[in-house]
Amino acid sequence: MAWDTERTKGLLLKAATSEFCARGLAGARIDRIAAEAGVNKERIYQYFGNKNALFDAVIVTALSSLMDEVPIEGSGPEAMADYAGRLFDHHQKDATAPRLLFWEGLERGAEVVGLPKRMANCASKVNSTIAALPGISKEDAGDLLITIVSLCDAAPVLPALDGLMAGDDPGRAERRRAAVVRTVYLAAAALAAEAREATPA
Image: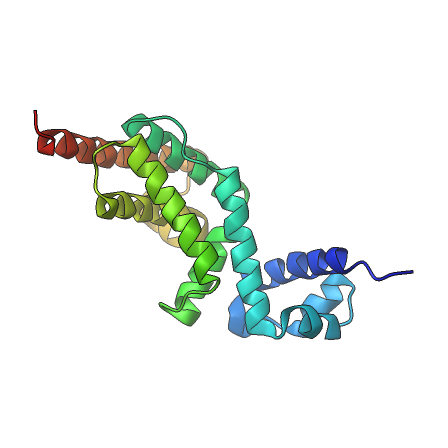
């Protein structure tokens, strides 16, 4: 029977995602990933090259999926606030992307993997933000997006700090979501107002 290469890659990516989310790049072990996937570890080297390349593939896959799952929809500050709320909800259910990005930042600093694909994804988000808030600059759109990402990614990755700062009552997630949405709405509204004022009559 022919070996199902794509199925095997999928099993390895799933197992590697779990391992990297829990332990980061330095702490992850090829043996554990292979065992979890039920695949000989030599397949990892055959399909991905090494642990670093596998980490690259995991991040690119996770972020590409996120692009499709949480798009920017509509127009105006409300659209950006709605996007922030949906991104927050997504990360509360699945913290894969935030955890991977935090590990990447801690262990790799400014080094970016999957550069062409990720640049294209980021450019698409920036363009969607400009479409939602006509007249704002590319730089302002990028700043707004990184603010949204920072607010939404921090919630599932920094639970201890969140609890210390704001308490851990049962309604905490809802209050945090409301704060994120409100903050993004105000920031987007300010940018939109500045853009209108800068537009010649």
